[in-house]
Length: 251
Image (cartoon, rainbow, N blue to C red; front, top):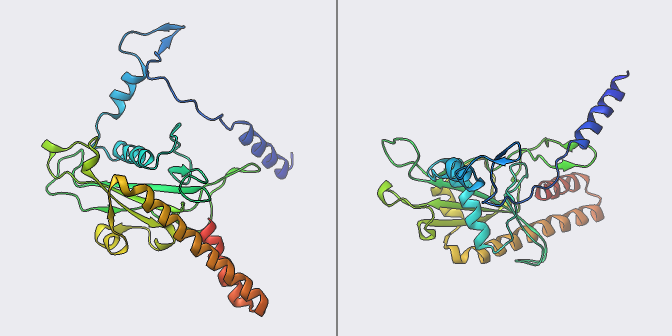
């Protein structure tokens, strides 16, 4: 069989295996064997308690931060996806006219392991190669690093002593918000982030995200206007530069 035909078969197979949207689990649903419940301590809630009770672990705390931001933005949270290029999607008309892709980054001074000193607050992985879904090709890794959202929310768990550590207490969190076009590096320290944006509370998150989304859209509109001006002038170098800027902003 020709190589092109094999590739086509593989591509079709990949598309055929795309999973359906997940349903949100009932916390009381029981694990079963042969159709029979395993026991009183074998429910979905028991699994969640076993797997996610240590809120000092980076991944668990990160999921919690996303959930908290979702609550602050008052959006419907269905089932978390690990494959999307962003963490939360604010529907069009909720905060601004269009939909807003939100990336949540979390950090804390205290960790799940023994420490000699408090952790320095840094946020990594801010620019990555996009991994969007294509109906023709499935998930395809992009070529150029970029911020994979419209707005970034940086969430910090502020407890500095384990005795008082409680990330379920919203007042232990502080937040900072940036439109994605202001992120020009892969990692940000708290010091650098503080120079770019002010701290906001849980109650101020929705407005801060809306303002950042509007700034992001204005930046994109400005780049598109420059594309049109370059086209009218016949300035090819400028046209290519601004077209690349638009592509970067829309990634």
